[in-house]
Length: 297
Image 1 (cartoon, one colour):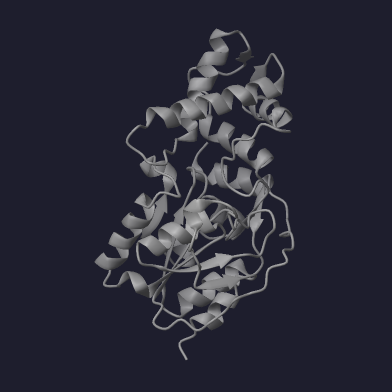
Image 2: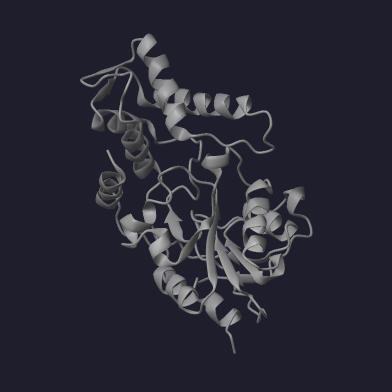
């Protein structure tokens, strides 16, 4: 399937989903001279059924595993939970092989390919398609949309449009897979570039095989904004996780906003020593609250 077909698949498999309420109170203040706003994706710009992309928990995913294989013409002869366990093992194997990364990421299509070859040899997977060349992109999306449904957060499009129209640079730093950028044309009707996101300020973990909470992606983002004439302190980074988002963004000099608008994805990381002393500049419970905090006036 090409990107247009994959976008249509995501759209067809997506349904409206409201964020879960939190008891958080917004903590807002005026931030001067914010010239760029960079966002996390899962749990920030979009609601996430599992709270993040690629969450490696097997509970309740067996049926989704079998259904996803069936959608691409494959049959799994066994308990779907076993298949999920093997997928998780394969993912962890790929992570462990990436010894150079502090927080290794994987390319999910490679993991699926290895898994299918293993299951084929074990006699657990068969089908009407060539097992050496299955549609791995479609398979990954068929599975992901079942286990981690997403939908735009309230005021997502309005907030993006307002920042773009104000002339601010927009960017992405996200734990992600190849299908993550496709969510935007699927659910908002425009590709990221059409929404105003700078194509050179989009950093996805799967492309570098490096993940948050490491600072690698944020360091690349800092280099990109500096190349465009900005200082790191002129960047506001918005994410839902104190460890994955606020801590590393602050370390590279960005100002930070913790999005606390969805109970599924809000991560204060209580008890985690890695976030001791970490405080976001803002806590927002709606995306559009960001607009007043960086108002030109």
